[in-house]
Structure formats: structure tokens, C-alpha cells
Image 1 (cartoon, helix red, strand yellow):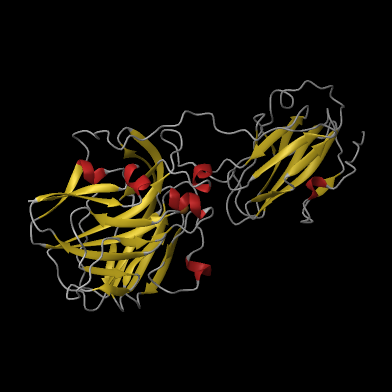
Image 2 (cartoon, rainbow, N blue to C red; image 1 turned 30 degrees about the horizontal axis):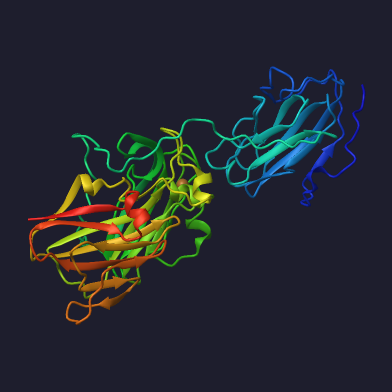
Length: 445
Ligand SMILES: [Cu+2]
């Protein structure tokens, strides 16, 4: 039995106190619970095995690995004692192919990383976790280790908003649901991870509430109670956050694992069009990949109109075809498209309808996750504007409005009448976003 040299420096410089170097023991000691190790030694570089083993404890907590940098004498075998102290599930996979199983909170596994001959990257395989910071680096002691993190090399799809989605395409129904008569609204929302088209010929693995993006439009009146049971039919952890009710977040907004359910109860004490969204970190990824929707709480004096539509603006950050959206693009705020109701320019291809002289109300929510909207209807004026809970214009006022401007998570509605038959485009008047899909048409006849 031999003893490997202990690295002379604190691991990774991470002052968490979690890093613990276990002096390596070894040879002939059969590792229990040893997960699949790499077949080839180390990452790329040939090295003479020392016959020693370095064992390091790595803890996952707060969407980070502690330590995030591990030094190993060149030629040593590395064994990682991996523990998950996070309330989310995580694993650890290495670029040389070694990987642990997916572990829940409190889970642990021993990972045989093989002989370390060169710098080796490790990360969590759950979508978005690596980009959110769950990455670590293993470096041979004394190496320069200037080794850029590896990224996905899969080809990226691109969106042509003018492309015809084809005769089979059905646009998301933008008609607002009627306000139901009851004062208690009980329903289940099922989280589903589904592959869907987001623009002509472009498919993504979206994370959804009830299989649609946006999620279902819920509606009620001031004073109504909503009792929503969230059921996680997905593979990742997800949660929900309803802006429409004031509640302590701790219990109801907690992430739940696949297969679990939680009941979220709130009373809507104030009117408006409110966002709901997934509450699981990184929220940027979960909202950016489809997990958002609206709850409309009617103002008490809301007049009847001839037609009512709901539009939700959001951004698309494409991942490879059929895979989830790209968190790095979300972090860099580089959207591939900006869309109403989840699909690029869908109401260009399938216009919304109205008749001349009808009063039309358009509810609008900016789901973001990052960009504003400046909603405008070409050829029309808004005589009524309601924004974030108050009336900014009434039809009886002499003034009018040309846009409804909203930041992320803000909402409101506008009302207008079309003066004559025609095709009235609607856009986010931030032109770069109109050109990348935030637009549609009212076909008035
Ligand atoms: Cu989620």
C-alpha cells in the first residue's frame, strides 16, 4: 500500500470549507458503488501512470461544484467522492466519458475519473446547469491548463420569419377565454417537456405548462381564489410563481422533481394581466424555454367589447434542432426571434380578424425573459389603455395612445376600433424585434 502525495495548495481556492482532500489510499482496494469509469486514460495527453490514486470530495451546492478546480499529480488516478447537497438533482460527467448517476439531495456517488494526463472538464448534464455555472476543471499539477471550456458543436438552426409554415399549421388561438362564473378556480397544470415547432421548420424541446407555449390563460375576478395543482410530468425539476397573488414564496414556489405535485393557492386581490412562470433556477432558462403564461383578473368596471385577444410577447433563443433553448444566448441577450404567443410571426401567416367599427380589446403581457415591448397597430389608434393596474386612457378622454409599452413581466390592454376594412399590421415597434418575428396582422372586413 502506497500513499499519494497530497497537493500542497488548497483546492481551487474556494473558501467554502467544503473542499476536503482525502489522502489517497489504494491499490487493490475495491471501490464500492464505483460508477462507470473512462475506458481510456485521462483526457488526450499520454502520461506515465504513477500507481497512485488521489481522492477528492466534490460537493454540489448552490448550482456550483465545490471545489470547482481540482489539481491532481500527473499520472495519478483520480477518484471523486461526489455528494449532492443541493435541493435540485445533479450529476457530474467528465469529458473523458466518466459519469455519475443523477443524484437527488443528499445523494452520493464515487466516480473513477481514470488516470489524469491533461486538463479535463466536468459538468452537470441537466439542461442549463453547466451554463449556469455547474462546471469544474481537473488539471494536472504544474500544467499551464489554459484550456477553454468545451461548447456544443451541434449545428444551430436559424429562423426565417417570412417562411410559410405550411397548410397544416394552426396558429395559437389568441381569443381571450370568457371570465368563468365561479369564485374558486381549481385546476391542474401539468409540466410537459415537448418538441414543438417555434417557427417554420424549426423545432425545439420546450418546457411547458400543459403542453403549450404560452401556458393556458387563466381568468377570474378580484376576490377570486385560485387553487392550482402543479404536476411535474417532465424529467427536470420545475416550479411555478403566480404574480396574480401575494403569498410567501417558500413553500408554493419550491421546485418539485419529476413525478411530484404541489398545490398553490392564492386569492387575486388586485386586477391586471399577471404573469406566471417557472420558479426553478436558472429561471432565465426555464422562462426562456417556454415556461410562462398569464392570469387575467378583470378590473371591476371592465366593459364588454366585441372581441378580445390575448398576446404574450417572448423571445426565442434557439438551441440545436429538437433541443432546449440556448442559455448562453439568453445570458448574452441575443435572441433568434421575438414572438407573440410562442411562434414567429404566426399571425402574419394566420391573421387575427375583426370587423370595421367593432371595439377590440388586446390584452398584452411581456413574458420576456429580457426584452421590452412597444405594441403598436399600424393604421389604428388606441382610445383606451390600461397598464399595470390602472387606466391610462379612457375612450371618453380626448387623448389617445400609439403604443402600449411594457417591460419584462408587465402587462395591460388596449382597445381600438378599426375605421374601415383593410389589413392592419401589429408590431413591437422596436423595429429589430418586429423584423425578428414580433408582428402579425389584423384582417378587418
Ligand atoms: Cu421549469
